[in-house]
Length: 353
Image (cartoon, rainbow, N blue to C red; front, side, top):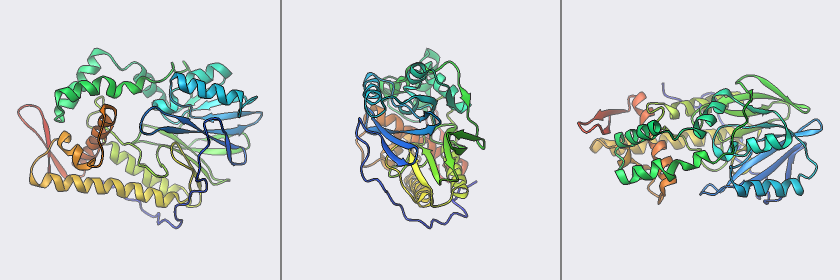
């Protein structure tokens, strides 16, 4: 079924109250009892947002940063400076990507506090930390070959191109489950838990209706589109359909005047406007793919430069671009906008239906 953003006419223009982000050693108050931090990342998307929510005599931490030595040093600087004397009462991680979950085990151990994730995201994190078995590498190679990727590029993708997924310290051995539709009380605030797929299987978002606050994680970002990809372990997944459905649900559930606190970028107003922009962006890409596949059947590898024609991609970025391209063709096959054709060599090509 084609996803649309229904009953959600945007009334508020995008506004960015903070035109500057916190420095590496700063914690900025963006609402009473809510602090915003920003940690560095070692790739093109060079930062991740961290939020601290007042929680009685402590602070609930939402997301933790990438699992490497420089992030440990950044946290040590913060705990000796802007966060000196702060007690972390609990760690909440929105999803299993290493820029969000990477330091969870370290912080949980340091403060002896409970750890919260959705069940699927916790198990996804465990999977990423134990994924490089020989069977999984063979499966990944077969997946990439099926989509027409050259052998040299495949070796990059199964090596360094996906190595970032392991950039976490060991996950806490136990967690407390966050589930869609439940409420969680943090200090004086009650948040409704929303989860959504597409960018990650069951990403957690937090909405405080009383204070019009929405912690959107990576599902709704301020100025860039979150990556929506399909990977070798679930090759026929309709990640894009799930993402568009999630956007439609959020647009119907949220008022237009919430302050959105995203996982990357800057806080903003105008959530319905931004949701419509994100949905339109993906439909535009589908149109580009449909146009390219009218003349001849094309592989996903051949379609990558059609969609990502303004970028020079390294192995890390190529993996994401390919995953996102496959998400679009899987969605379009499900919508009967493309037909998949498997040739004698086992390579999959797509033709506009």
